[in-house]
Amino acid sequence: MKFTKYWKDNFYKLGIFLICYGMNLLIFFAFKVDKSVIFSSSFLYMICCLLIFFIPYGRKKKFYDNLLANIKELDKSYLVLETLTKPEFYEGELLYQALYEINKSMNEFVGFIEEQMQDFKEYIEMWIHEVKIPLSTLVLISNNHPNQFDKKTKLQVYFKM
Image (cartoon, rainbow, N blue to C red; front, top):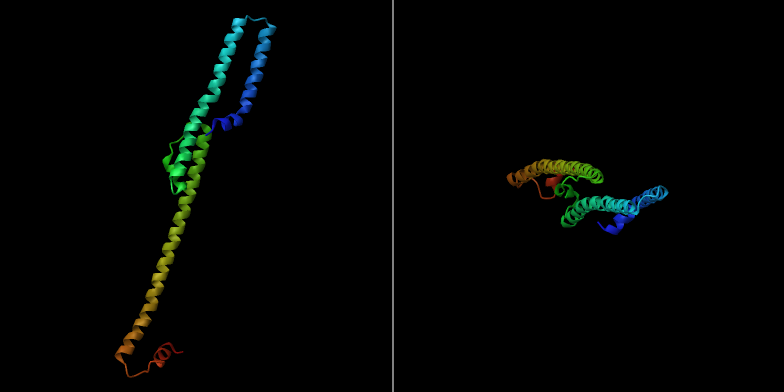
């Protein structure tokens, strides 16, 4: 997570802060407040502004950087939810819940596909066993009665072609 993009995304907060700060200064000048009070309140405003920007940035940066790093490391990136810890901020919780739903849907889909593959495999095996019995019967009959049929008509007689 880059600070410049975070800054651009939260630029409106700075605008609101500056408007409130300007109104506060106008009130101070209107009531002719001492300059030391103005400087101390300005200092507190600046500290609050820095805290408002940097504390959420630090929390979000840790989560999103961890998320991106885990996605790059995994060969199956849809399993990234298993590598994350639940975040402590609302946007992260929303993302975590969305990833949980996506992961659940993916697992259900993979289970459905595996079930279909197993059903198809069983169908093929059953079909092979059903075809194998008549062929084995033909081989046994032809081996037990070698003089009764010539090679061309053996299959025609048994399959009534």
